[in-house]
Length: 282
Image 1 (cartoon, helix red, strand yellow):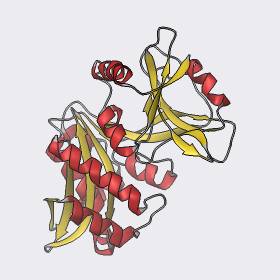
Image 2: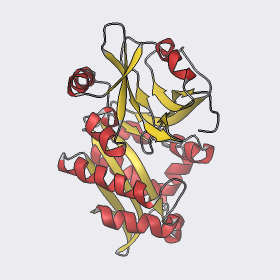
Image 3: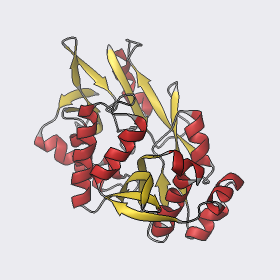
């Protein structure tokens, strides 16, 4: 195994492998990754074929391999094992989240997200709702779901959560806006708002790739909380897409309170592996 800088031939090989895997989704696409992070290297096998695409930045004058914001995890290509990445653990600055096909393999710790899957449309989805979600939908009277543009979503989100929430700096918001714009051109992104008496009370940003939806970000205001607006938003989006999609990826969360909320829709915990290097603070 060896690391190599990106060049057109390596990129072409990697993209061909990704395109051949029907299980790979939105965030596995190189154009998505390139918007969210500018510089990449590849881990090559003995045949000099790429098996893992790795983000790289400079930190204290050294190369650092750190998980980019908005990219929850990165795929280890099919046919490879976590042991193939063991050499990376000698790196000083390393913190990567990895999707692997071999469920029994594990580095410690692991991360999790919630995934809702279905085969038979909205009736099957709603049958899996918790009683809490069902009660919230009953009190969601007079609410309407409408498409909104990205700027409306961003303004509403930041008005509720603040301009800088965690790692959501101005630069991070610009990257998300660029990703949304590029995905919308491909008909792979939309924003939805919930309105009560023509007032926006909840908003969500979604991506879509083939038969999978991704709930990227969402929030609601105090009035929205009183009428279960976020529950209504997710249910209404699911109703719209239940016949053309088969899964909703909730993106996160490792935060238990958020994970518990997503599970109330019938979503199940799904895991990825975490690979860290010699410096424990990244």
